Image (cartoon, rainbow, N blue to C red; front, top):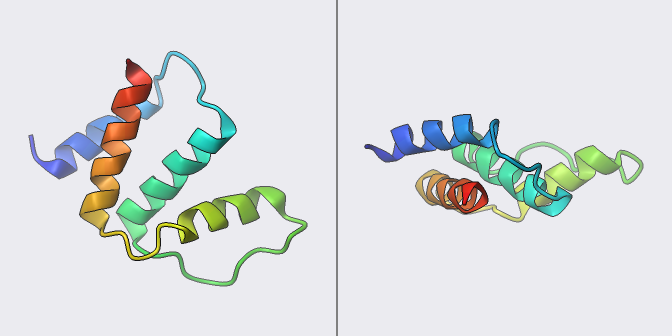
Length: 84
């Protein structure tokens, strides 16, 4: 199976996890997905008063420079570890 196929399977698997991951893990999943599909974050950092958008933006921004292939592999590995 190709990396893209594994990634697509992991995305599908992420929607059917037995337990909802904690918030930090959810942020990591979000950031890895965005880095995998969009590359580096663009745009202005959201205001401090928009807590959720700011947390998502910050998590994604921490992955700046990570290749889409590496982000996909990390995403796959994280979702696989959550399935076990």
